[in-house]
Length: 256
Image (tube, rainbow, N blue to C red; front, side, top):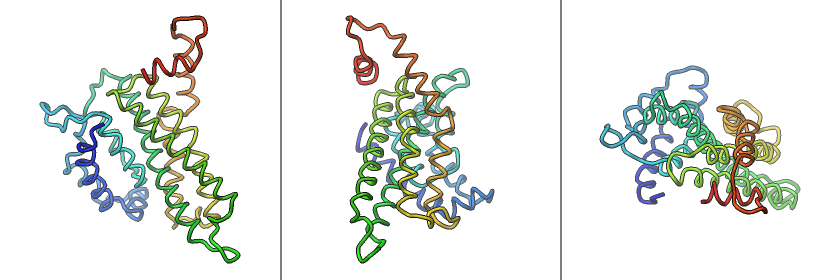
């Protein structure tokens, strides 16, 4: 991934999302209101990010676009922006490519939302005082937040790895979606445990992200579907030597 290219696009993309997809606007969109957000996205040109330059697009690779998808997750954007990016860059006769890219997109969305949930949970734990001290000082809660942070890092790494070599194959897509979807409930549950009952209230922002995470983990195939894809690839792999293990397969097919 080119850091300069990513920053060049990510910063204005984040700014656009902040202007048009604030929590109140996202709730309005979920209620069916036309907030004008999609018109702004269309006018921005970001939907053509993956389209080749000679076809009028930006010609970016998935390694550059995956951070944009994570940004969509950080804002709990309900619109199909990432889906439109994929559709514009692929033909109708490329169903496998679309499916794999969609799995990566959902993993990136989950990773972005998880990052936002972690930040919200840490801030709340440091601000909420109980028995004379912030609840974040409690060892049990620190342990939960540490596991939550580990899951967030694993999600981001899985997305970056799957996007690092261009359009992902089935194994890379399955790995990213499996890691993200499997960890998503832990992240959401920990966030709600930190916030308590207030987090499930309709007016609180927390549930925007936890609802989105659960929706995205099921869309495009749940982690059981993609885990099965990984298992099939491992069982069908031809590897040299008699001491073949799943670790060998991971090294050869995911990190090779």
